[in-house]
Image (cartoon, rainbow, N blue to C red):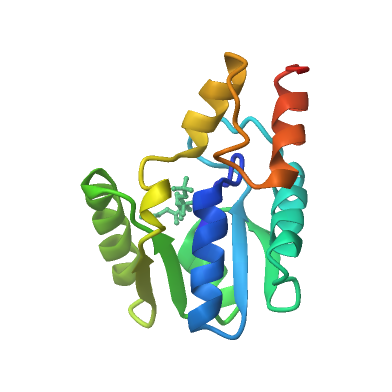
Length: 159
Ligand code: PNS
């Protein structure tokens, strides 16, 4: 399950849980150099995800790793064939469609599975969480418990 996770949200947590209902073992793969300048370092995102996965009581089945460069190269190096991605709304589709077909052209052996998060989270994104936190809004509805403090601390929000 690759992504930026900058920061992890309840939508990501929901997807990890759903992926675990389908597969025995999941790797959450954090991209270290996303196109968008991340707020959190890769190591910070890894630490937050580990806590989220512990909160879900899925640590035994979910590994958190980082990757750099092309996703297909990471898949090959970890002998992974299936990629999980979340699809929230129609607006996600075009980017995901392009990414899926490009990746599959580069690595025909792979498959992509798109999971839909609970409808509670269809509008949610990491960017939204960062914006709300920046303006001192309450992010506790949108991110797992353990993510609230790191986001507030990073943005210098004390409440
Ligand atoms: O959480 P995001 O930002 O939607 O995740 C996007 C991600 C990291 C999965 C995607 O940008 C990616 O795979 N980047 C690695 C570079 C790559 O392989 N690009 C070709 C994809 S067509």
